[in-house]
Length: 339
Image 1 (cartoon, one colour):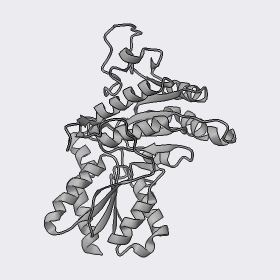
Image 2 (cartoon, rainbow, N blue to C red):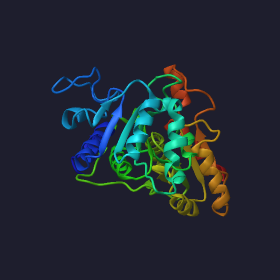
Image 3 (cartoon, one colour):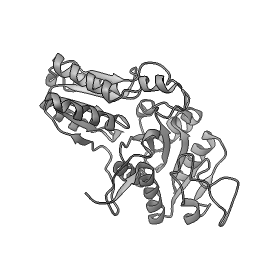
Image 4 (cartoon, helix red, strand yellow):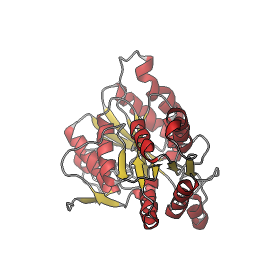
């Protein structure tokens, strides 16, 4: 293993630096991404957005390419749409995924449909970066995982990295893509460290990663649920239970082939999703498997999700709300022993 260990946050920051240096049509816009207060030149910039991902960009590339916006998601998404149609590659930051409802028309009714509505003559190379997820006691309006809502929209690509290496590689792919990408970053992963390949590299969309291999069950998880599932699977090794763990990395496009191939080998499926169960990625994956790979199943599909309730503010209740390693391990064990 190399010494190139980075946090999830630093990997994203590095991807932005490299892509802005590589392509001068890449711009960044959002609330406080450049430091706010209308400063110029050598004024001390802010940390780089609320989570520090855009730190250093304004100083290096200037405020014509790193643009502070009003506190208006509609303005951010609308400006990004126009910039993309005009030949730029905007990376728009929405502080919290929960706020995407404010600019939903610009996202699902405009950006997602430009190529279709103009007969393929227009491209919309737009990335919307946004922070999601529970685990930091930010309350019901700042802690949701709403990727199922956006995955349901034709014309959008959806990326959900679970580690620093994928965060960098997927973001670089997203920026170079000619279609709109919504890029979900779990807040509880920003400080998590992992090895990141050196040099320029990308992670292809639609290619899942199998982070654990085993014989008894296929586990599909995304975002923060991937490291939680890894802990759960490792803890079950003492009981002689092993599992394939599939991290889709992108859920639109989805790598169904890896899921089906793994399921053909194991015969059991557990889907771990931080979202509530109704109309979730868990229910979507379970439904597709039931339709397309029913013959591979030797047991009912097990969904491990948050409850159908808003995210609690209380630290204790929030811990109970999120599917943790112990709950995931219990679900895997139930699936294996029950079928």
